[in-house]
Image 1: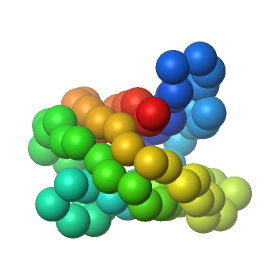
Image 2: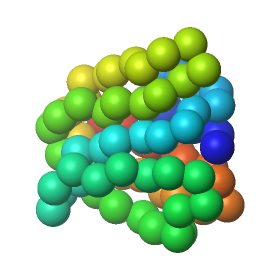
Image 3: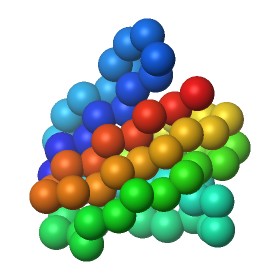
Image 4: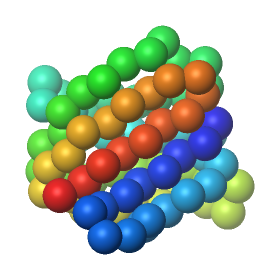
Amino acid sequence: MKLEIISADKVLFKGDVQRVTLPGSLGAFTVLEHHAPLISTLTRGTVVYDTPNGAKEMKIDSGIVEVLDNRVVVCIN
């Protein structure tokens, strides 16, 4: 699936991933391929995503995520 992590002024990551774990407001959750559509707020924590080159992590303070059609867009503050 495709993952984009963006801030107000730049794209921080854009590429293919096998899974993404996000710090949701109601607790951490993982998105896999063909996940149901969703929109969620994010809290302070770590976004962990598995790329073909290994696992990566990114600390965030807050944000929102949209999952739709095997595409995950994370907008962070």
